[in-house]
View 1 (cartoon, rainbow, N blue to C red):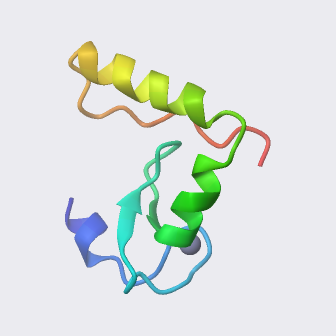
View 2 (cartoon, rainbow, N blue to C red):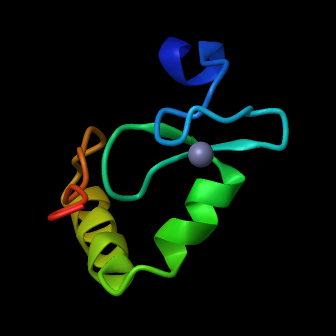
Length: 71
Ligand SMILES: [Zn+2]
């Protein structure tokens, strides 16, 4: 969690995190809100969300996400 709150720039685009930060649904990157919006538009976002929920249901608090695939 230290890395999450200590991050100064988006892990994905390198942009400022002043507008807000969020943990990626696909991997462990700390990303800006613009990148978070882009994630939500991905065709496999629903799959990432389901995988995350399934992991939490199974008691896995350290799920690393499904990854960004071919991107
Ligand atoms: Zn970004």
